[in-house]
Image 1 (cartoon, rainbow, N blue to C red):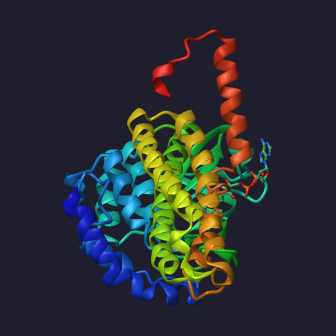
Image 2 (cartoon, rainbow, N blue to C red; image 1 turned 135 degrees about the vertical axis):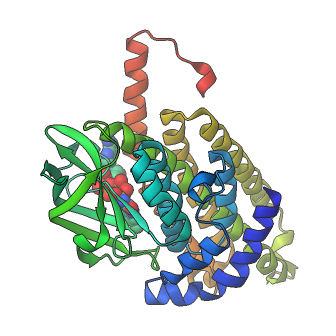
Length: 371
Ligand SMILES: Cc1cc2nc3c(=O)[nH]c(=O)nc-3n(C[C@H](O)[C@H](O)[C@H](O)COP(=O)(O)OP(=O)(O)OC[C@H]3O[C@@H](n4cnc5c(N)ncnc54)[C@H](O)[C@@H]3O)c2cc1C
């Protein structure tokens, strides 16, 4: 694992970082980068060896993401993780043998780029309110409806779509070139990521897995994992912000002494570094326990704390932090999505509260060991 982390650091600083600024300005990172990532072995981390991947455990993948997440460009890091980790895992765990054999090797090789579409204009955190529907046909299904905020929406050639069919919730697989890309959204951060509105009009699709009616469980499992993925990338990015602050603070002289010598500054750094280590530890725990509530609360809590840390880092840069001369300006904007993406903080806390209340009222044992 340590070798993989070292390799990743070298790869990111040589092959990715020099291009990030341009990608952010162009609001797009090229698809060819998937090819480079695949050659380095980074697209098959979670994919079993028999499908061309490395078959790492979730905990190892999250550790890797913390390193990969240090690239100061969440639009890029999340775009890659969405395809090769979150979508790959869903296909790996819920696809048929044929779907696994068909798609997983191509995700690992970068030939297939995936998107996961669950959000709709009228249905964000409230997944049950979706309207996109699938209808059975002689050859499979057709989809009608609209999704919004879809990461990789314009570049994906395979899209996992959360939709209803015959009164049940399902995940469908559809080809990117059969979907209408209505528009790319202009955003506060994640500029290099194509976040799109997608429309389905009699779009041909296949069911993920064999049986109708499994979609709500599948999407909840994916979201639960996506929350850990986002948190890991966020931890990496915040760690990067702290690392970059050190040289600035040592050379920024305020009232005759470096900013880094001020007790308030030292206290902040010590606390922030400890917090990040703790969050990292909790992520590992959450991954090993596979507990929906744990992942959900953790993502909500960690997101807020990472935003607080990044905001204070920006503050230490003074006016310079408000300019594009320092990465913290982008890091701060990019991190701001964390309390929203993968489910809004308030809704997630409420949903966990409801689940726990129900469990208690049913007088079930609390399973303290799970937390
Ligand atoms: C850059 C970006 C990338 C994204 N990528 C994807 C993707 O790849 N695939 C995908 O499907 N989606 C994606 N999303 C969508 C994202 O997951 C949703 O924005 C998120 O789930 C929140 O949904 P919403 O925006 O509809 O907000 P809503 O659910 O409508 O919530 C709006 C606000 O209302 C408040 N609120 C909601 N519920 C409650 C409650 N119970 N109690 C109190 N207050 C509440 C919260 O403050 C919340 O922020 C992305 C979004 C962005 C911005």
